Structures are given as C-alpha cells and as structure tokens.
Amino acid sequence: MNLSKKILSWYDNNKRTLPWRISQNFRKKQYYRLLSEFMLQQTQVKTVIPYFNNFVKKIPSLKALSKSKEKKVLKLWEGLGYYSRAKNLHKTSRILINKHKGIIPENFAELKALPGIGDYTANVLLALIYNQPRVAIDGNVKRVLTRIVNPNSQDQDPINLFKTKRNGDLAEALMEFGSMICKPKEPKCNECKIKEACEYYNSEPKIKLKRKIKIQSKSYDIFCYLKRNKKQIALTKNNDLSFLKKFNLPKIKEASKKNKNWKFLCNYKNSISNKKLNINLYYKFSTRIPVQYNWYSLKKNNEFIPSFTKKIFKKVSYLYL
Image 1 (cartoon, rainbow, N blue to C red):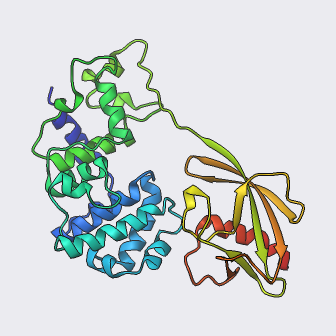
Image 2 (image 1 turned 180 degrees about the horizontal axis):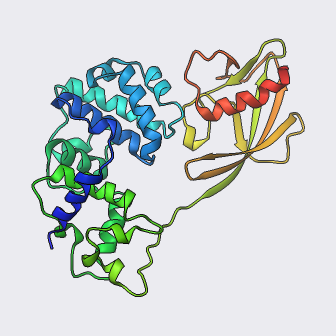
Image 3 (image 1 turned 120 degrees about the vertical axis):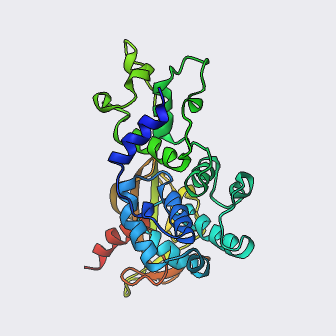
C-alpha cells in the first residue's frame, strides 16, 4: 500500500485554507512560512490565524520585520504568549537579511543555528520551502506514525513508510491528518484512508497512547506600588518570574504569610501555558518606589505590557473608582 498517495489524496480533498498556505512568490512564501511556524510553536492553528493576518498586514515582509523595533513586534504578538518566540523571530529576520541576503538557508545546520529554530522547525521549513524529504515530528505526526506502527515494535521505522516527490505537501498532510482525523481522543477511524495498514485500528484491545502533560501549580504574592493621586503603578523588568522574564511586572514573590505591611486586595487564578497560578494581590500607596522600578499609567501604556500585567491593572484600577 502506498501510504503517501493515500495521505496526499485525503489532504488534497480536505486541507484547510490557511493564510500562510496561499500561493506566493518565493520571498513572500518563505516569510509566511517562517512567521507561521514561529507562531504555531505550542499554539493552536485557530488561535494563530488572526494574529498572523494582523502581523503581515502591519509587517508585510522579512525585510520590514528586520527593520521593525522589537517593541512593535511584541505589541503585535501581545496575547499570543511565549514571547521569546517573537524576540527570536525578530533576531532571525535580522540575521537572514544581513548575512543570508534575505533567503532562508537550505542547509539544516545553518538553519538550526538561527535563534528559535530547533530540529522540528528546521525540518518543517526545509520540507515546506525547499521540498526536501523531511518529516517534521510534532505531536500530531508522532501520534499518526505511532499508531500506524505498533510502538512496542522495533522492526520498522514509520518514516520509511512514506515516499513521495511531494515532500512539502506530505509534511503538511501528516500534520493535518493528525489534527483532523487521527485525533488524540476518539480518532475518526471510519474516515481514515490508511486504516488497513494501521496497527492501532487493527489491534485488540486498542493500543493506548500515553500523553503526559505536566501541569505546574504555584502560588505567588504580587505587590503593587501605587501613586495615590495618579493612576500609576510601579513596574520593573528585573523579576524572578521565569516564564515572563524581562517584561514589565510589579514586585512578585512566591507566596508567603508574612505580608503585614501590605494591604490585601484579592485572590485570583491565572494560567500561562502549562502553569496554574494562584495569586494573592497586595497593594501599597507610595510616592517612592524601589530602585529599578518605574511608574506606568494604568490607562495609557506607551510600552509593551504583557496580558499577565494587564490583568493586574484591571484589579488595582478598582482602588481608584
């Protein structure tokens, strides 16, 4: 059975219309692919689409991205999360323009040397842009391949089951197939074009695929220095919150019961990627703030403020009503 033909036949008839798949000239195509792959890292397609459309509207080319200020890039990324992706994308665009004449390298090692590009992203870009015979193994593709070949068997490398001249399309087809048909729960086996060759479909009982996602739960105390007569809050980029490094935040520490000098405002829950946060919010009106902090308006933000901080803004704004 030619698995590639069956997967590609399904893909040709069922693929989604996505803005980064629109046929473009080479430079536009590589920019769209680079941008979309950075955005799609750990983020669902439906979430990425509006961000992608807005981003290319404001920054239409790789050259324009390289000339943009980081603040503008982060502002367009606001709400998408994992902001290191935006910073790495920005750095990569400048390297590509200055050292590679604005062309994404065809060499795997050169591509991987760029900021924010690992094995997966390098493989998928080489397949999609240069039609190289590479399969990008994300969660969807790994699930498809694992189900086709019994995960307990070492006799066959699932990658070798797929051979085609349409390498770029195959890379996308496998990702698309895993997302739409070979789902983690309740896969649509009745609609599957390759079920006859699938160990998962033919096994009794069904092979159980383990998917481990570690959810981290942590408690934090957030301390807000506020100006009494002005709607301002003190923020700093020097914070210990690892998942929001170098972003404007108030004073944050791991939860402690010794907060007598601060007034308690509220407790609330927040989630960032795989982290569940239990937050105790405290405040203090003050005209002086610690070194390395600056006053910021609760209403007008001239600099990029992450969504995490904006939620804090909303909480403390009630103190001024």
